[in-house]
Length: 62
Image (cartoon, rainbow, N blue to C red; front, side):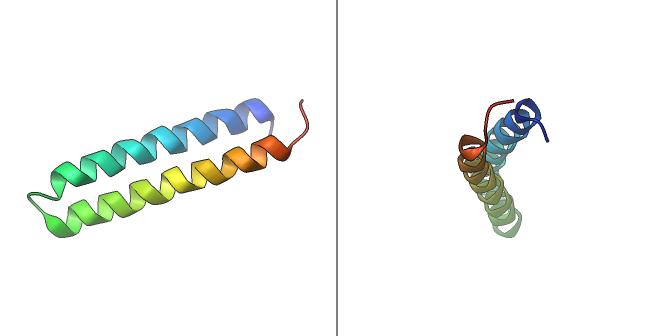
């Protein structure tokens, strides 16, 4: 995978995860189980994106 494609994946995971995390906090008021699930998925995606930043930093430039 090229570095440019990895950069797009990283930021998509981070922003998508944070979006799901915030959406889950609003949904949680009406449906606790579903809101918690959205928060867990969003937090996991954002954490994967953060780990991929470390992977990207250790790779040589294209």
